[in-house]
Image (cartoon, rainbow, N blue to C red; front, side, top):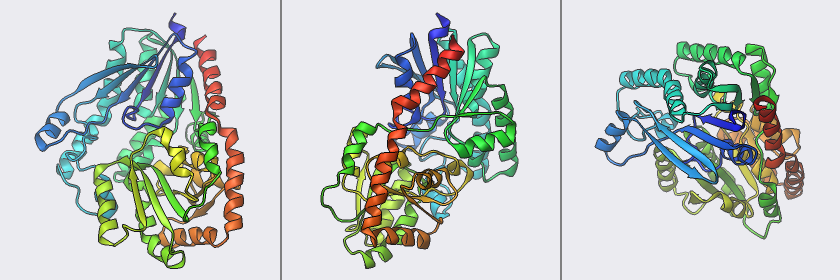
Length: 420
């Protein structure tokens, strides 16, 4: 029955990044559908210059069946996510150093070709499945373009845009490309059968820009898994960052602020739990070593999702100091809700959805995107243990409203309405 087949198309590699909105939606929706398929853009990280060159100049599909869900990874031609070849690493962006790898001109041309073609790679992968989809859930502008093409071809009955990124915000180096992406995104959003936004800030932006009226379904938390971490055993005062290691994470600010904080709170430590851009990870490790911060920084690296509560159980303040560009400003970060559920107090960049979430629930504080502001915000919390404890307890209570089953249930109802 076509109405019971569901397709999710994502621009993120949901097999590489373990804790994404895509995973929770796919697992929740799989229980109410005859078949759930996830098509995603696969990131490649081959070793050696020759292997990276081949990966950049070739394409292939990777398929996998897991827990009743079919995953189809698309490794496109001219893929700029190939680490170490494209020069798209965070270390260069963070330090201002010239990007290694290909020239800026070649990179720009390859980026243009990839942007134009990614939608067609998604469409090609979907058509190869030889199915007629009841509902297609599209994440990102290029996924949405492919989904609407499937509807025009009679291969999909309805299209839902699951809107959790303001895509034009990632195009700050070219005003022309930013405007083109924004115009394309607005045009496609108007054609979707339903638009779901991850946060209130993004929903208001969409209403203003394209006149659509999105429904807000935020990101959530596995509350029963994270809530026990709120019962903190004795431990040194600890800052924690959990998530992807990318240039926009604000971890350089944390390292800048750490010496001043340690002067006032000598036992303070910073724990980094995550993975992502190898170049940015190497940049951070080099800074830690060269600035003599090894004793103050605990580098945990990648851990299983199930192990995150254990990491949060001995932490007090969670970092969500994202660079305040438009790509991150509207993002509803899963880590903030997970911090709250675990009784960890978020410190988030001012004028972002993350800060708005923490402040709305009286569970965290905001800071300007500079080391001095971050140092003052963290010091203010550490100097007032009673306030720190009260914010953590309030966050733990408020996070109950973000249980994944409750949020995905509404998404499932929306899919059922359209697919029926």
